[in-house]
View 1 (tube, rainbow, N blue to C red):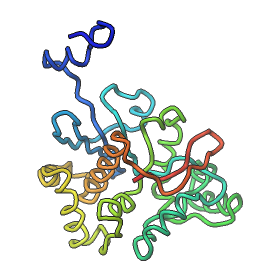
View 2 (view 1 turned 180 degrees about the vertical axis):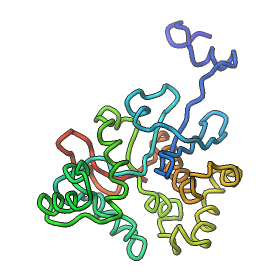
View 3 (view 1 turned 30 degrees about the vertical axis):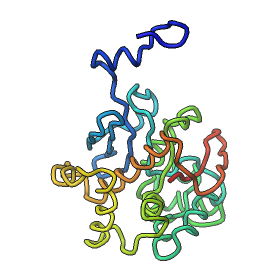
Length: 249
């Protein structure tokens, strides 16, 4: 199996021998058990849902993780992020309300909500929502593990923006927690991942239906990223750690 200039083409040889390594486009969403991933094997087109240690993934970059879309803010600024504002404009109301203002890094590192709220107001000029505080531990986990180099293969998504893109750039009509909202999102995803209902039926009891759906649409965006088709809501801003702050779809 020789390639250019007579050199051994390892990928062709592995394929011929049946030893070609799987590569995954992966979507990750936070859940009560930690982090749930939806993995799409780009060779076999098989899918897998499993819990992962996301900070360890970011630190070690497993060889088979090609692209990873993460539903968590990446890139923490001392002012409102342009990507959050752009995502809200894209979604309009009421879906735009699902994109909450990302807190600054100092607020995420605070010990309790009152301190975080005070710190965020002092630095950014606005308070911190309870919703943002509830996911602050996960924001902190990712912020402490990710580097600018990671962002070559791991990037931020927002599920509602991804569903907007998958739905011919139209926002979803119903909230994701409602029965109709889940049904509408599932219908869209079945066109991409036909076996997704199997994962909903056999998911871990700490993982909600909406967690799987959000991870799956993040995986769809990861696949778009791998294929060079992903877009972003605005040009990235850079935080003090050199992280790019933007949202992909």
